[in-house]
Image 1 (cartoon, rainbow over the protein chains, first blue to last red):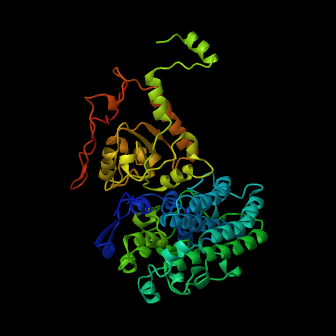
Image 2 (image 1 turned 90 degrees about the vertical axis):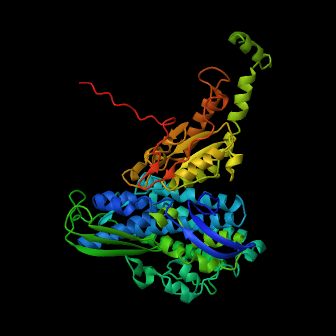
Length: 358
Length: 205
């Protein structure tokens, strides 16, 4: 199945052994989008690989920026000004809304709901993309974060527009929930399908909404707060069963929590500089050493591991991609289900092939 | 060939005079069926083009087909790696004639930001004929709409006969393109000389 298939979310291939329609064996085949991200980053300067992080998980370019910036900031010992921390949180949580919205649209599409949910999801996506475009100049590849802060300050009127988008979001969530979650077909297709037990999830180092759907309370924003997440009260929604339905609901609930964070951050946004004056963009050479920066990206723990030898480009550069690691247990979730369920289970894992293959 | 003045005069009276060729091209250019085929980031913008805000349906191309047999427009949206290139050419061969290709985004045109990578194809136009290239990383949905309009103009100017006729009306033109094979260190052949001729550098001394 694949690599060209409308429901593999990109160029992903699965070697499937079937007994009738039941899955007996499933082997994922990666590498159809391998773009040498890590090696290119080792050949360019620290700042030069920032645009490549945008193209890792192309739904969430800003959170990718943040993870990379965190790793470099740890390596070079830079501080981030208060205003930049708030802007980072606002943009990152908007990205989370964007990612989860699109995922739910695609998941519904995989179940055969052609058109409507995806249309609704992309309508909301455009609203957030308008914000990103006004801020960074690009719709998808928002190359926004810099070491020790952000690239540019918010344009005038941006924060009011963001507040309007955030205020309107709960209405969309309610609409989406009415459309999907009570739907009989959707429940039949998702409940009890693709169950991921908590023990297996922990052992396979699954992170993100997929782990929390199995009932494990692990969110880096709580367990290892980066930025200023410690100041925002929010709940970490947990699932019980770990089936596709739980994974779907977790994302809906998480969006509600993101809106809470966003509302508070927009209200409290302070003034001041947006970048650490110590941070140099050109001839940036951190001292020799190593650092690992990680964040709770919408898909799970996204980490960047860097080794510096004191030169202008990293000696070693490695990404810990949540999509790839969440995908490794696909076979365990799919065994015994039908081929139609595999499509739904794969959709609920939330993969982006740019990040899986890098 | 009808006189232009007479044609205008007749159209004022509500009579449309046209040739079979124009009618044929008009019908085809407004009913392109793209293949639902995404490779990377650009595919998301391709989907966005089909969604409510940009509304590809206005141009008669909203029917994204899942099967290459049912589609006549391939939008190569995203990075083509050397592992994926044989599949792209195979899908192109499976499409029904007359068929067109839009190379969407810097990666599909030339390898884009990943050009220096060992695994990224330096442009899909080395293997299949591309009709419209869209620059950008990724191009905005408006750019894809513009590419579609450009392709429609191109189709409306096609002739049935003569040296400039399109490939599907030329019995000597190839109907299938050779599928490259992953060799020990590169694709073999690395390009199709019938499609891609590298520009010759002229140096003025």
